[in-house]
Image (cartoon, rainbow, N blue to C red):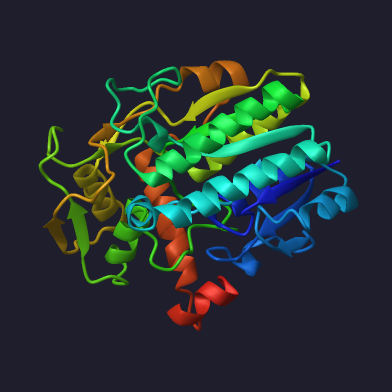
Length: 339
């Protein structure tokens, strides 16, 4: 049987495709290439360019490739953008997901793994935040993901669609083997932005908000290495195949770092100082969010390998330097990938 990875040409999705192939799985990628890249899809893996909610094409795709599992990454994911364009986020993240879930049910897909987010918690009442804590999103992005979680649970009750919902905390890093990494132009991920600034690709780094109720006044986040995150997806698939019941799980390491701590780590690992400016808060940003992650370890038997901020930064730096290989202009590297 075959695994369909939506958003498989993007940052996390491409890492998932490599992990599945490494495990001997048959894989098909579906991506609209709005933020993904054809070069990020490994050679020999079918790439279908379409929307995840395209109900005129996906049923035939599922039948043609004997797809029994969907791992759904495809989504818009920048919190401030979702505040500016809420309807666009609900269309791409919620409406398309509704259509994909319906297609999965009608096509007899056996398992569904959904890429959700810690943004569903909003500004949590307690830290670390646990899966049973209130979900009060502060942004349309978080709301759009929470709506999909609800639809998936209801579809399971009505139609028996076993699933795992993984709530990501802050994903960073790159494949240790150098096969993939965060390559989106104008990305907003802090570690990537800081590394790009260290390499001279950005003139400065802005810190959005320095008056939060945290020790140094900047936001605190739980950063998880992308390779450990996709390992959790592989473990989730094994769990479902063993007959595991549908479940919602946090994906983080259980400890947080402030924005200023991350910046200092990047400066230390890159051995470069760079310009940092303070700016106002961004809408939709909670002050502090850290994962309560005991459940994912207990249920999926998940064992992270890269639980170290310096390692995450070093892998990000390696990837950015690979993208800047001689002969690859910055304007071209996004289209063609690293040499």
